Image (cartoon, rainbow, N blue to C red):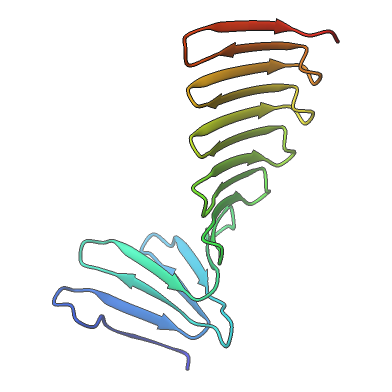
Length: 166
């Protein structure tokens, strides 16, 4: 089965359901392209649904990948419900995961911004020498790998500056 295009069931608007056995390619008038590859267990299946309000939904039994024409950007939705946006050279990765965490990572891991369960961590430097952490309304700024300087602002509006022996 190469694929099919049919009106979406149970709708009275201009919704269209496109189903493909292996892959779906969307070509816009401006020649922008998105390749969506659907691969699942027991055969490759997937569906792209668009409706009259120009909204679109992609459903797949496996992972879904949307790729720019020049492969400069990849958007991947994976089986674990995570979503990853990647530049072609791998220099930037934005990952939204099923646990509602969001991670922005540079290729060399020198900069990382992570939001998990209401906390925010900004880490600069491969050795994690600078760290800014916000959790439970507290802010902690740590400089140097050995945590020798620490600035902490807490919920009770107190501020503590700690210099530890190196």
